[in-house]
Length: 510
Ligand code: NAD
Image 1 (tube, protein in one colour):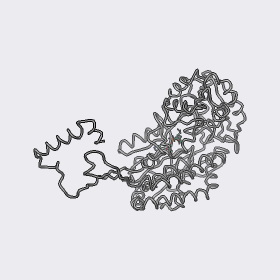
Image 2 (cartoon, helix red, strand yellow):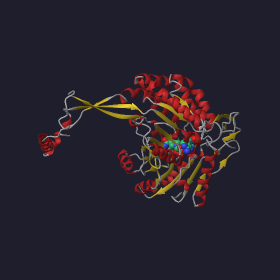
Image 3 (cartoon, rainbow, N blue to C red):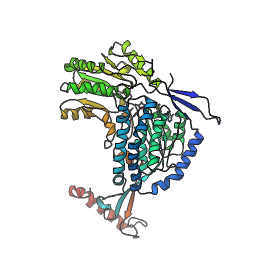
Image 4 (tube, rainbow, N blue to C red):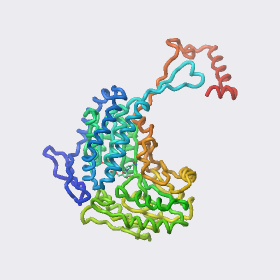
């Protein structure tokens, strides 16, 4: 069953894609793929509309985004229904992964924007302080393209879009062709709250439409998706010297220390590996458990994982895309072939939809794709290690570096191990929740991405920080300007000597 299928073109020659629910194959609509010419026209519309939006005070833009929280609350059932239609995810996950964090993001950013985007007076240091004043102004970039994936189609769209709008940009959203209407809800909610239609537009389509957006006359790309596409986008942005943020794949490790609360760790291992059918960039993909507690830990994980149900309306929904089923099946088979033991599940089930059984695999090694490539399935993979040092070494032996987690009763140890992990973030006794913390500067290292999508730098990343240096003394000629005179040499020499020639002077000049 293909989740996205090519339909006959429209009468005017546009490509069409038909969509099916991965839960039961039901028809869930279609999209008409926007052509490169239409993308260019949409960018031109956005460019014309952007100055008017940017002229409105941040307070006014923030009021609109805050109004969107109420729209979201009022429309939550419809949004959840669309998300569930396109992904098959359980209602709990539609609410917990998509709607609740989106309410929180919009509420948070709209509350922060006035302060975080206000002009900042910065005190100058040293010899320039008596002469100049510095004001940093956060100017909008212009037109921003936001390209998003299918695993968190609503939240991963509305979060960057809201930030870009607050910063005064016009935005074009290209949601995934697998979950286009879930992404489109981000636009509908914000329009209903008062964002003008020309300031925020949706462009439906697949990679061709996304590539046209990236190659268009835009000022920044915010991309969430796979590593290969991310690298292509980075190269295209480099050609045009425009910034991009890339939130890419992950292979997050969970480290279970000997002093971990094994009840919590085993429950976390199951949930954090399997929720959203395991299709979470910051989900747990590999677990390293210290040998001394490994038997007890595996037994507890086995008991809990055995109780997890799958199917429509059950704990674990389908994979959201049939292509994902091939990847998950391949990784599990590769692990089997190389000597891993599948204690639970391990098979796909396509009788009703695109399902993969909740699976527990042990005796895994770093020779297996299951421990090296992003799997994105409801799989718990556990490897025994001698001690925490080996766990850290193996966790870092990875092309990805998105996030990681440490399960221990000792907070100081969690912080110490976090410092040794080469990941964008680390979570103690929990995992994926880090993306839902807007204060946290969330972003990946290594193949997991570039830049940050949360935290103050994310919001300001949709602006250009423009320093404006103000003259304190009016139209007096600067003494260093032409014509050069001998006394200027003496003044400079004295400034260098008195300003930097002793410890006390250097301290005063800082
Ligand atoms: P993908 O790269 O195939 O597609 C992502 C988006 O890019 C889609 O909208 C797609 O249409 C578009 N696209 C495809 N080719 C393009 C091109 N050449 N130019 C411009 N746009 C193009 O990724 P996916 O399969 O939809 O998403 C799954 C991936 O996203 C996983 O690897 C997952 O880890 C990652 N992800 C990362 C985060 C994070 O925050 N780090 C969050 C969620 C998902």
